[in-house]
Amino acid sequence: MLQQNQRKLSDWVNFLTTAEIPVLKQTARNLEILKQDENNLNARSYANIVKNDPLMTVKLMRYMQKHKHRCQEHDVMEVEQIVLMLGLENTIRLIPATPLVEDILGKDNRSALVYLLKTSHRANLAASYAFDWAIRLHDLHFADIRLAALLHDIAEILMWCFAPNEMLRIKQFQKKDKTLRSAVAQEKIFGFPLNQLQHELAIKWRLPELLITLMDDNCSGFQRVRNVILAVNLARHSANGWDDAALPDDYEDIAKLLHLQAGDIMTIVGANKQHENA
Image (cartoon, rainbow, N blue to C red; front, side):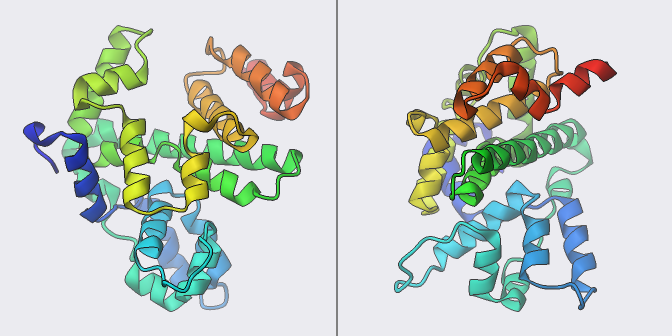
């Protein structure tokens, strides 16, 4: 992990480009169980497990982009396709589900682990929302949109792994000041907002251009990017509770995207049921 005096953006980009990306223990466990099940072990079943873990997904993508053949004309943005291109046995051998996030953080960083797991869960929710809305909009890039939503906050997840103390300080700042924006708090601690780190990493890792665009909030003029942003916002705000003050605006924005009413959106995302059960 980088020391306090090595926190420049370029240092973090270089560090995270060479560092072994850890994976969630649950992912490693599920993949190990699958490997023992020869009848069900295939590219699809492997991909279905990987796609639930933003860290394992980006680990696979980073490897693929680094070892991409010169003759390969098109970027691959589907986990299953990557596995098919590399070969299942090669994928398992060359991109092992190690190290574990839980081991990287250790027993002294339980709070950071909890936040990391919550952020990972939030990423999965965002991916699910974005995928559903893309289908509703008859967008043929639904898989790419799902992936972009899943990885939208990957820099935040990585920093929970490698800079847990700094991330906890950001949380403390925000608890003291509820109006403090995440980017401002991040800049106070790291000297840069995490979305800037993420953009630099995506370029350094040579991630597919379409993915970089879909993950870039500055490209919100595109419907697909707006889909990703709104899915991420809904997952983030609802994680604070379904009475979060930002949610009504989210419903209105999603309604515009899907050409529906805000009430319809509340039904689609299950907000009405949450209120009934409260």
